[in-house]
Length: 198
Ligand SMILES: Cc1cc2nc3c(=O)[nH]c(=O)nc-3n(C[C@H](O)[C@H](O)[C@H](O)COP(=O)(O)O)c2cc1C
Image (cartoon, rainbow, N blue to C red; front, side):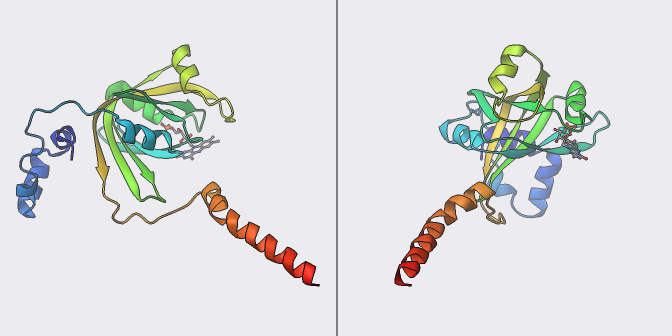
């Protein structure tokens, strides 16, 4: 576990729960040491850029947590530097809840899941919305039929890989098509063979 992740999440109340449940000693050193900032390394970058969706939580000005699903074509979530990621805000229901929340509190938490591999990555960061044309261009997906209204940029505060427990493998249509392609080919071969035999 990243020390930065522990620093942000192991609040006094959380630590008290860990004591109550007997797990505090396992985490005692976490979040107390000085360590290099978390970065998007090669594994995290590849994982992030292979996603077609994720969930992002922000904090409303009344303190309510708010979570939204974000989706797009694979690659719409981009790592722009070792500590910055971004994605295009495609026109949707025009409620702008996440964007509004960021005006008061720029903290966000993201969870990204690779269901077939049963891997998940949690990211905490500081987010902002921009309509800088250069950034919009770098985050746009020209082949995707959606209007890019603005973009979200997230400066990394901490990241954490989760264990695979309780993730049910799920597959997209494209992944299923790829997996069954050899079966379709084999069926076609066998049907041709049957037809030849009359
Ligand atoms: C026509 C249309 C209707 C939508 N309706 C909903 C909806 O009812 N609820 C929802 O959570 N998202 C809906 N979405 C998706 C959201 O607009 C999208 O996830 C957007 O990013 C939400 O941003 P926000 O939650 O920060 O406001 C809709 C999208 C479109 C294109």
